[in-house]
Picture 1 (cartoon, rainbow, N blue to C red):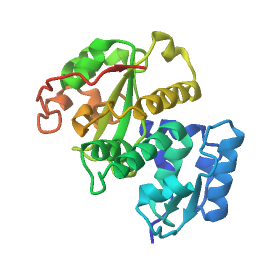
Picture 2: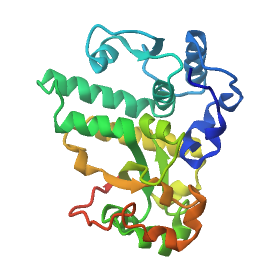
Picture 3: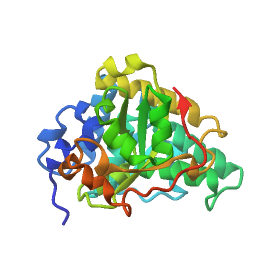
Picture 4: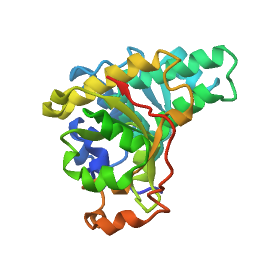
Length: 269
């Protein structure tokens, strides 16, 4: 049996979850009534969740997963399963973006991209492993896209939280965060923001990014293939791993790969 715990919430990876009331006080895995309560609570807090959305415990859909969600609003959710638990929480945090990702899958399947292709692969990678990197300075986004790790994590270290920040979207990367290890990476999607963004509270930041990302995902010319996202070694983020306080931590070229990317994925939010 998978043991329930909430200690993970103290890690910065899960900062977006901290606005969900009572999450840290949960004592056991949620049942159907608890999932329904979480949805009702989020709707009452003003989250623009799809009207028909419901997490249905242990549902075995008769159609493709994405098509079932698109047609019914029902998200199959396995009991006592971290992957599906974090997927439900991602819906509560990123309701517009998650709905837009589902619409993208439905459109692609309708065009014949049933067994996956670049558009669905990119959507799946973002949904599973995506982290949204908001930056008010294009050079910082370019440094990430070019994998200039020492510039990003050492020379510009003081700019994290002031000019650049990370917000977790992918539920698989949340699950992997339960056992962080060298080699752990997310797939970063860079969104440029106004400098005033960093003066807002986290709820306002997340709602802005959610709306901006959803609008872009409804255009299939945006994020046309997985390569539009950059690898991000998550243990290199300031405050995410104690060993990275020592600059020598970034000398590990197997983790902080020096390969340069040819093209920036930065867009304006």
